[in-house]
Image (cartoon, rainbow, N blue to C red):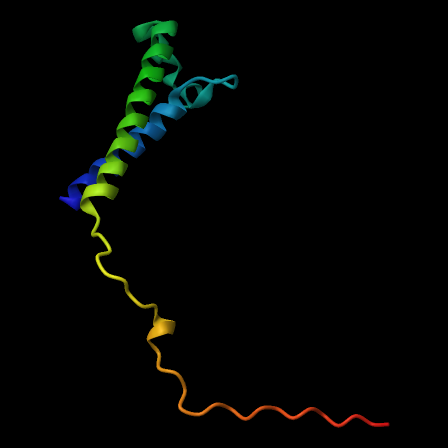
Length: 106
């Protein structure tokens, strides 16, 4: 179950990255670099922008919802308190001798 939702999360994140990069910005975006500039002829320039904006919003919402679902319901809960590695090491049997101050010359 965890693996399935992680696969969905990764798939949504990759599609979300592509959707964000395809949006045209002041520099033309990635759409102009890889020949995606012709996508405006399919939907029309304004409808393409609206479609990519709505797609980005839906994918971002889906990404957050799936991440919260995985975190709240699929990850194991810390039921007990665990000691750290430092706390589990027993204290040394003998303490090292205290250092004596160095003699100072007068």
